[in-house]
Each structure stands twice: as C-alpha cells, then as structure tokens.
Image (tube, rainbow, N blue to C red; front, side, top):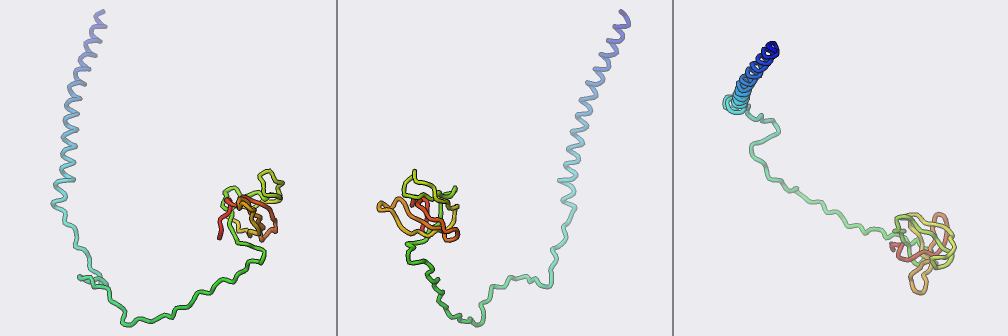
Length: 158
C-alpha cells in the first residue's frame, strides 16, 4: 500500500510541475510572438527605404495630350450591295426553326397527321403556304427537299 502512495505522490508532483511550467511556456510564447510581430511590422519598415522609381527613355514627366491628325482623308461612302433575291416564286418567305428539339413534318395540318420528315433546330426552311387560320405552315427544307406541315409558332421569320 505504501508503494501505491509513493507512486501517487510522484504522479501528483509531476502534474504540479507540468501545470506550473505550462503557464510559463504560454507566457514565453506570447512574448515571443509580440516581439516577432513588432520586429517585422514596426521596426523594419522604418529602416527600410524603397528605391526610386526608374525613369526610362520613352517616358516623360508630363503626359502629352492626344494630338489630332494633321489631315483627315475623306473616304467615299459605298452603298452596300443588296442581296439578290434567291427565293423561288412558290416560296412565301424563309424562316428558322426555333424549337430546341427540332420539328416533325406532318402530311396534313393536324397534330395527329402522318409524319413525313423532320427539321433540326436553327435550320433555315422555306415556307410554301399557310393554313387559313395561319396556325400551320407548309415548309420545305432546301437541302433535303423534305416537305410537310408544322406549327407556325415553331418558326421565326427571317
């Protein structure tokens, strides 16, 4: 039992030593941090002189105002050539497909009409005729020559 008390007494003494030295170490660490901060942020900047800005041959001390050209050359205005009308007589107008998933061409102007082809997004098509209520238009793709009815709202006139 006495050996247990001696070991406990030694452990208690060790705890006291660590407790006393940890306060001392904390104090020394804080003082060191303050000293380092003061050295790098307060003392060194006062003793450090920055070099003067170098002046190069192409620089001047005063900025010159921009100068106007001595003469202005008149450029003749040329009229832009008008694009020749390449539309065929049976074409009412040209349009682009604005439906992001493309269009299905139908054999008749109805949603249940038989599929007769398709048109991709942003493709230019030729509008050949319109339904009486103008809800549907009959189109042709110039490249594939596919023809069919599509909803008029899925096209943007160009």
